[in-house]
Image (tube, rainbow, N blue to C red):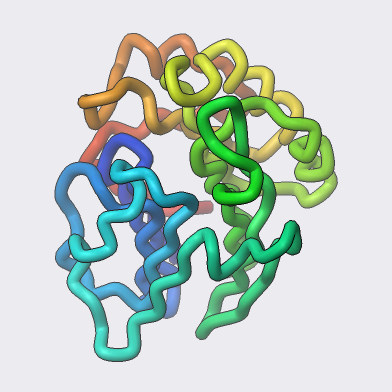
Length: 197
């Protein structure tokens, strides 16, 4: 079964049922020892693009925002047992032309990694995709705050919504996480791994 590990901040590691290892926005915490098949970067801020951290397999693919968004066109790619689709992500601190979120499909699951964003109109179209897990930033400084993230969770209507990227300089903020409201809410501590169902 697929598993997700929360390194902390906005950094996550997905392992598929077939053992494909994908790191999303490597930067924070521990847990970079599983050799990577794929590394995804949503944008070029230093707390999202530390691609040197994960151990890499010889054929590791590093896929960055600029690979998946060119001249306003969002790309899709299939690698091994996963499908990756770039989607819009932006706010006053993050340019629409330079940032993306990712939809990842594997093991009959659809996961949404929002990257750094606030509530945007494009999220309306995510509802119809029937996302299983949505990972939403909620620091309220560089991104939307916890209340707005809760609104996004309602718009997207994923089966499970997970707050991440909670406070600059911290891996996880329990007080902030507890205020996140969503159907099927899942709270993950930094260093925790869960099986995706």
